Length: 89
Image (cartoon, rainbow, N blue to C red; front, side):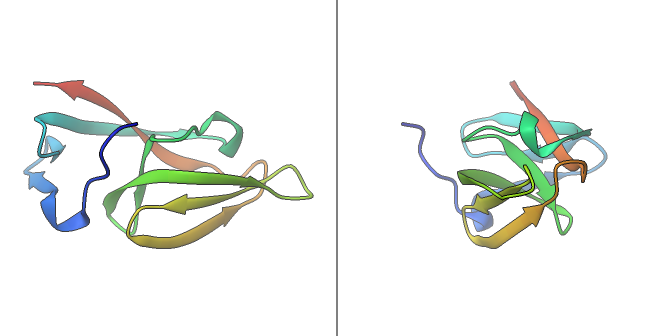
């Protein structure tokens, strides 16, 4: 199981995105539907990256998305989230 990263350990890189302690660079978040979010993905919420720790289904096919160090967010089935792709440096 991947190690969780505390929000204070994430370093913002000007115009490039964010760097995690293991050297992974998160950049260019893209809109994705909640159905395309998985455990351990990184989402841009409130201007910072947050790691997905749990996903719960809603009755309307949306999801409640639990994030490490951030309150859960709830999204309807067609309400996009900003999902990062990670690139190891």
